[in-house]
Image 1: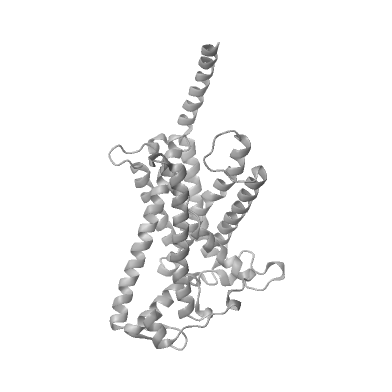
Image 2: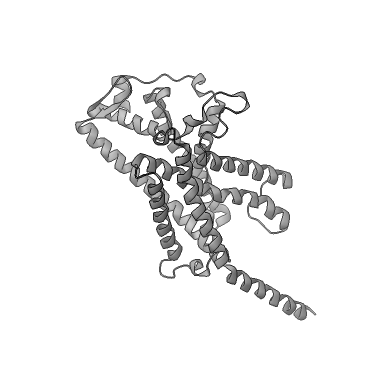
Length: 342
C-alpha cells in the first residue's frame, strides 16, 4: 500500500464522500449487520469456562474491537486506492488488492481494468490463498459454535436426540459436525446446479445463501428475548437489558426488524430502492453475474432455503420422543414433591 501510494498517489477523501444515502442504506445495512452477529457464540461453551459471567463480556468486547480494526483498516485502504465509482462490495476489495500488487508487475488501464504479471501475479496469488485460508478458518470457528448450540438444542428435544450427544473422546458434537458438513455439501451442489454451472453465479448465489441462512436463525432468536422475559420474568439471568420490559422490547424489536430486512434484501436484492420518492433502480442491486436475471437469482436462494426449512421441521418432529419424555419426567416429579412436602 505504501509503495503504491508513493508511485501512484492516493484518492482524496472528504466528509461529503461519507454522507449516507437511502440507496446506500438499502445496499449496505445487510453487510454491516453481518459483521456484528456471531459474537454470542462463545456463550455456547460457557459451561467450560471458569467464570463465564466475567469471561464472555470481555471476549465479546475484545472481538468487537478487533473486528472494528480489522474491517476498518482494509476499508480505508480500499477507499484510498480506488475511486469511489469503482468500489462495489467484494469486487471492490479484489480490485483494490490487484491494483496494489501492480507495483511488483502489472498495469491499470484507463477504464480501471487491472492486469497483473510477473511478481505481481505471483504475490497476488499468495495473497488470494491467504484470503481463502482466512475465510475458511473463520467459517470453521463459526461452525464450531453453531454446531455445539445445535447439539444442545437436539439434546433438549428440538431435534433427534442422536445428534445431541457430545463425543467423550473429543469433547465436541462430532455427529452434528459431520451432518453439517454433508448438508453444506448438498446445498453447495444445489446452488451450483441452479446457477447453471457458472462460477461467478455460483459464488454470488452461494455467498447470499450462506449469509441469509445464518440470519434466518436470528429472526427467531432476537424476539425470544422479549418472549422469555415476559413468560419467565423471575428466572435469574447473568446478563439483563436495562430499561425493564420497555428496554427489552426496544432492543428485541430493532434487532429483529433489521435482521428480517436483511433476509428479505438478500433474497430480493434492491428491496426498498426507489421507495418513498427516492431514486435508484432495484435491478442494479442484483449481483453482476445475475444482471437482468432476477428470478434466476431468487430461485437460487429460495429453493435451497425451502429444503433447509423442511429439514428443520423434520428434525423438530424427530425430537418429539425427547420432549415427551421430558414432560413425563416433570409430571412424575410433581406429585412426588407434593407428598414429600406434606
